[in-house]
Amino acid sequence: MTETYEQLLENNKEKIYRICKIYAVSPLEPQDLFQEVIFAIWKSLPTFKGNSSVETWIYRITLNVCLRSKQKSEKTYNKTLQLESIQFVPIENPIANNKQEKYNALTSCISKLNNENKSIIILYLEELKYKQIAEITGLTENHIAVKMKRIKKILLDCITYKI
Image (cartoon, rainbow, N blue to C red; front, side, top):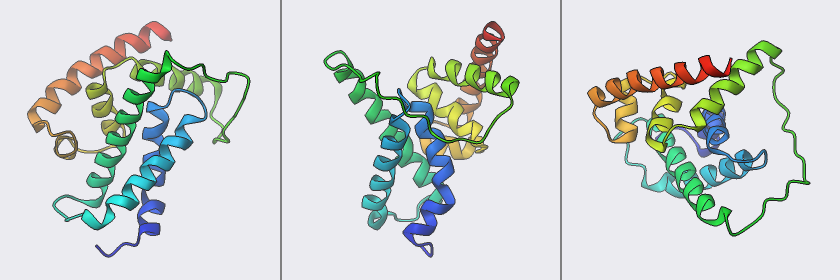
C-alpha cells in the first residue's frame, strides 16, 4: 500500500465520521466511535493484505467497530445513566431548515432499521455500488439489490409519515 496512515485518514475521515454519527446514541458518541475506528484501522493496518480496496477495508472496520459499540452500549445502557446535563454541540455546516428537517427525518428512520439494513443503506448513501456493499457485508450482490428495494420502501413510508 502506497498511502500513509495519515493520508488514509485524511481521505476517508468524512466517510468514517458519517457512519459513526448514524450509529451514535448521544452527541458525544460520534467522536468516541470515530476515535475507536481510527485506532482499529491503525492497529489493523499491518494485516491489510490488499484482497479488497482500501476503502472497502475501511468501511468494513468502521461498520464492525460501530456495531460492536452499539451492542456493548445496549447491554450496559440499563445499568448506567447517561449524563444529560452535559451539553455538547458539534460544529457542523449550516443546513437550511427544510433540508435539516428532511435530514433529521431520514436519520431518524435509518436509526429504526435493524443493524444489517442500516449497514446496507449507510453504504448505499456513501454511493457505493452493490458489488462493493456485498464485499463489505458478506452478502451476495443480488441479495443486496433485493434488500435495497425493501429498505427504500421502509424508509419512504417512514419519511412520508414524518414529513
